Length: 376
Ligand code: BGC
Image (tube, rainbow, N blue to C red):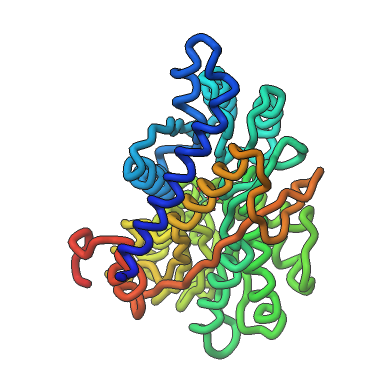
């Protein structure tokens, strides 16, 4: 049996389970008026924004999987706005969802929406990003975010020789718990290489002040992130990179190393560094294997990405939803503390992709079609 066929089969099996679980969960309400309409929507999904290709990937993979099973689930986008996110959750509650799969725009602000869902008897699955500071989260499906940061940093380390290499640090949004995990993973790998002189931090006085500390507290990371945040926004990333290069001297440039937190910001930052005449070459990291960044990697404009196979996250989320609909505990391996409780979690591995393995990992595996790219 081919790999592709067996994974399609696996998805179909999960959806057959989902369908039957939805029917089971619907039984107690079968006598209620308008029950059919309500129970048609046992699971609702809320994603952060349509403006970033990462979340369009998730939407596409959810839709692919759900369409294959002939099942209709509503996917709503919050467009970077916690108030809209809350309204989305309320709308799904009023439509009778039993399980909410939600990727919060702002991890702490989403606690109110999660609590509202819980109060209505809806189970809450935190998807990719952790909802913080509430006990109203039943389960967390995520990638290994510490490993994402570690792989980004390791790529920079592996391509640096000698000492005094200029290092520019950038981070995600402080409202996203993942931004801390990515940064922590990167710091674990970079800090010893800053301490031994391989890298010299050029764009963060807060990071320089903490560069002798192997492990940072959340508060210490907050200080650095506050200075180098992109807010996950391409325009913010571009402006910050421009400001950093304007402030830097010629000696701070040359062959530079850039920790960029994800693909969207990596492309913005790379475009800025590429046009600076004093930057002779650069290495820049990313994550998400967005289509545009895959092309950047093929073209030599972005050095690497960390591929997070969204299909795995989607199927883990669906398996968890099925279990919760049946009144069972979803399978978990470990937990994440959200500031109030340890949320049972399942975590997926991630893969470093650069020009050398892009075809093998992303095209030959069937994740992307070769026709989407030029120069493969
Ligand atoms: C996700 C990344 C994404 C970033 C910006 C993070 O929480 O894990 O995949 O690039 O948010 O949307």
